[in-house]
Length: 376
Ligand code: NAD
Ligand code: MG
Image (cartoon, rainbow, N blue to C red; front, side):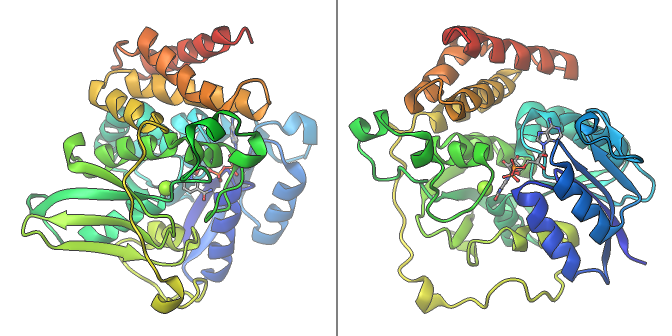
């Protein structure tokens, strides 16, 4: 019997990557449900190829396809169906929250690319998993690497984890040059091809801040045992240091196909020919550098929001989402993104969290705060 996968966000970068993996792994998995926001043409092609029992398009009014579900609630519907064993959440941003919580509550495995979910509501996700018996397995390459390095170890064996960061397109840019960075510059990532929002997050290092918070919740580690190092080649996906001083790393060419497959099969490994054979000589040299915090303050701001807790991570996430959207529309500068996050955390960073409604209210306030800063 093959396991049913609901793929939320099937038209995006992770979504289309996941469908390539699932196409090769038809002996083990079938696509039970597909959802997307608006790209009805691509969603229609995907549905024709994989014949899922459920198709949801949030904006289906525009497409008007008969038999498709529509509205934001189609994500939760897809995630909780009885023919679904694994929910691969590849939606971008806070919009993925309810589907993650509902899937965990319904006892599903959530293969989680949508890191914003855990950042906003890590405690709620843990509680939902506990109540419903679901589990989160990360798709993010760094967290997949850590999970693979931790396999079979006791928590007490771990001294710290070290997340790698490519450094993004502006890794070696001066402050002056950064002040003039354009949308095109920010979308030119050196090692990964990804959706626009995460590509900008990689340029500001807000993505690494989200990943530090994600790691805190996934691996139950305090923030002072989560470090970040810049590794421009994106071959070492992260490292774990054990109490005896030994360090394990996980490596591969930069492709999301590998962490997507591992999130589906964990703790098993299955044969797959999608990833090119590893050639250490071709990957050489592998280099590591410190983070330039003064040029990329978003990493410290986000980590501090994680330490503060409550609704602070949700405020960090929402302010970043809103500011990145304005940057992509050409309405604010690259530096404005981090300035907006800092301002939102200053105003709202001590808002209590506690439940979904409080977190969503903090999310809305942070977005409003950022829009008002730029009179948008
Ligand atoms: P993307 O923009 O390419 O795709 C996003 C998908 O989400 C699309 O299918 C879109 O239709 C859907 N979507 C957008 N808004 C929605 C809404 N309101 N309701 C329902 N669906 C909506 O993004 P991506 O690069 O694939 O990233 C997806 C997630 O995976 C993000 O959380 C990102 O941080 C994470 N991630 C991506 C990569 C990568 O290589 N792309 C790597 C690691 C983690
Ligand atoms: Mg990552």
